[in-house]
Image (cartoon, rainbow, N blue to C red; front, side, top):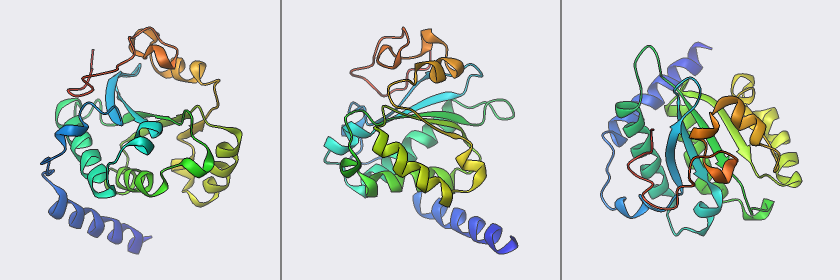
Length: 196
């Protein structure tokens, strides 16, 4: 256990020294892409992050750029949308609409997930993976065996029946219409974040 802790601290220190503050040069073009954005807050005022895998798949964004953009969004979130001691974690919606198993942008997604899991430990409250096909859910259930139990308990997978889960955590007025809420679906100006 001590070695894992030491390794995690060493990894975090190396990450911080090479990636922070985030280099945002050239990332402005992704602000309106809708790949990864912040939309409102959940019932406990945690910011809601949305990762649209369909848009990620269609984009020409390179792995290194998606990593830099993820860091930029998360660092903005930590510095502008958190309240130390009160609001210190976030809720994530991963939209898998129109994705088959073979279409998942695995390498790009792995970079985002590993960064969020390894560098921003303890920040994830819940992740709702929605619009998943049955095949995707079966594959993900096998992956759960390799994820630590603490993280696995935070992950929830749904096909098209996700609205009740999201509304349990996010007020309908703060949830985008495309997810079953009444907040207008964001189609442009994804950044600056919508934190009504």
